[in-house]
Length: 446
Image 1 (cartoon, rainbow, N blue to C red):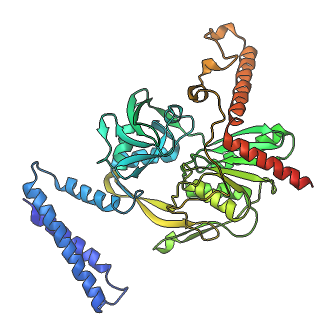
Image 2 (image 1 turned 60 degrees about the horizontal axis):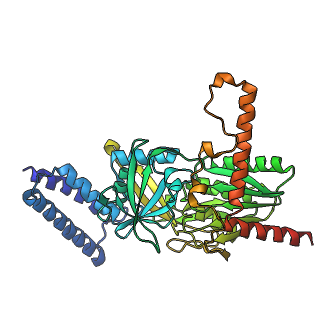
Image 3 (image 1 turned 120 degrees about the vertical axis):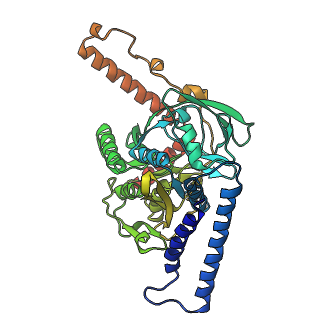
């Protein structure tokens, strides 16, 4: 049954692995190294024995490729929740996510026990509008329980053709399990939004970290300065429910507000290429104006790098709730035939040497979730074009001049901006941040 060929492959593999037990030029001869080698071959023998049993006894015929792929998946998935052996479709999905556009629900997830946990919904996506919250546990996708699923299985089920829908069964603290039906869309991530909340008080929301995020941030701050007619006196940087993204994006965003000496972040791993230091490059675009950074349990990874850097350098006050606590760095390695390996290669540390892995960033000022809104949730998150005052009616475009169309569009944009600011001013976290910044500005004048 060609099992000898399998064994011969393992023999070659064994020879290769055996080399890792040797020093650069000399064979290790001490007892401990020999014991390691003997233990390695014992483990390998156990593996081949199980492999042989499956080939001979399993109810259905299983190909060697299937068994090897399953073995590799198990080996990688057992390391930590973020290391994954990617099949070609999964590799493609990951690349689409990195590019910022894909078909799905708009939800960032992780594995927790036998459930899939929501790290955060992405702003302005079907999951966000359906009221999915950070910390929610997904226990069933469609009619399939998730307890035996890998994270990638869950992602594959939730992604799909736009305008198709899927039921998610959700468990949330303090509530009975409930089902949410969500219609898939093309998810395009707009990573930076901004508003001028008051004279001199800017608000910037970063929903994820990508390569262009820092430049978008600079552009938005310049727009706020133009709207204000003078430099900003203070800024609220909202990183709540921001699941992270590219490490370089987080470093670049931190550098927008830092101009002193030192580091933004550093990483440490087992191999030299994983030991990196990211120095402050600046300059500070706000020239020292006070900053409040908002975080919560949905702020993860790159968000925590920014919050940790600004906190350690005393450049910002961190307000909100303790962040998610993902302090590890993953590297994606391309393999043969479209397969890939996403593997944890390092931990990152804040400038003062803090590892936030499984701990999170503790806010300087802790806040509870308090709802200042008297409106129903659907009134806040489900606003449609038809709900905006002055929206364009279903009118033949030829009946309107180009000047009329432009005026209508400007009116709609201004009304949407006004509504957005009104909603933000009813957000308890933002109210508290605004009050603190106003107090700091008053004290600075004395």
